[in-house]
Amino acid sequence: MIRKVLVANRGEIAVRIIRACREMGIETVAVYSEADKDALHAKLADEAICIGPAKLSESYLSMERIISATIVSGAEAIHPGFGLLSENSRFAKLCEECNIIFIGPDSNVIAKLGDKQAARETMISAGVPVIPGGDHAVYDEKDAKETAKKVGYPVMIKAVLGGGGKGMRTAKDEEEFVKNFAIAQAEAKQSFGDDAMYIEHFITRPRHIEFQILADSYGNVIHLGERDCSIQRNHQKMIEEAPSAALSPELRQKMGETAVRAAKAAGYVNAGTIEFLLEQDGSFYFMEMNTRIQVEHPITEWITGIDLIKEQIRIADGKRLSYTQDQVKISGHAIEVRINAERPEENFLPCPGTITGLHLPGGKGVRIDSAIYSGYTIPPYYDSMIAKISVWAKNRREAIQKMQSALGEVIIEGVDTNVNYQYALLNHPDFLAGNIDIEFIDRIQQEA
Image (cartoon, rainbow, N blue to C red; front, top):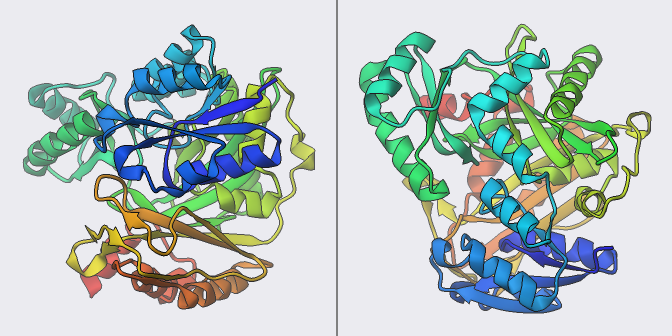
């Protein structure tokens, strides 16, 4: 039985995991860098251990230091959150070798699904539709160009071990490809310590639809409906909603069954997300599987009433799923907006600094996931997301109105944020009408 969990992350997701553990009667251990000595997650956990300086490679990405902290603290399990080491198969393997429970799938599954070519082959064998793409990872420009030519322009350049929009670029022709391949590969090397790249055909104006999966070690796999994550900038999600306005009940059932089939084919255990690209004619293609909890998991919790973090811990502790597919009921509509410390008018330049005044919204159907507080100094070393606001209402129109009201209440003084930019997106006629796709932001920026 898991009695103590080390949270190998920072920010709002670390706080979220600590709170879930506390409600389950499980002790928590926070790890923090020197730059995060005053971070909320370090204050809320039962124990806190400094694991190094601000630099990611010497703290939150240092497998040895995190494993050492786990052993010293006596924690039986590690929850990796999202980002950082959450999809690193070497880290999961190290946990297994040290008899530490990794709250996620096993290392072999992470490796198989993290390798985009291996994941494609798994899905093809399971009868899951996939996007046309290369048949191997590429490491140099010459091989990459030849692969792109075979796949056909426009193409998407993706880090094999990527996620969160890092190491991703598009190219409409060979000239653009050469430039963007170098940029994407350098970003992949910096973010994931690996420069293997994958090339696939780029589908014009699809929606990004993902299905939340839960699977236990007894062969039970269910889905919790979909999230529409089409509002993106540079492949990073900004606004998510559940369910999607684009799916009919029939298409939802078909995609959900396909997602479950995909998870079973991979031998998946724990929480994960099957990501699809949905074309306007209803055709959909497997894009990738995220082998971790997602940033946008609160909106699935809103519409299903299921606590995903608690389910992750229960599954890792060897328990069966708490729900069957028939017991999963989708109710109402939920929207999440990511609040970043940045200047949208200056190409979304990050804006670290000290928060001198703070008011966040509340009320029925409003949820805040954040680790900021008045007087907190946002460090310049990490991701600029500082809060997530999610809302629930009976239908999409009321959920949009509730989110507009919630954003109108936000006061964050001392740093610049994207609150006004997000408010403008929520009021755009195409968003209100549900006429969105992954090129939505690019289009409206060109119109401005």
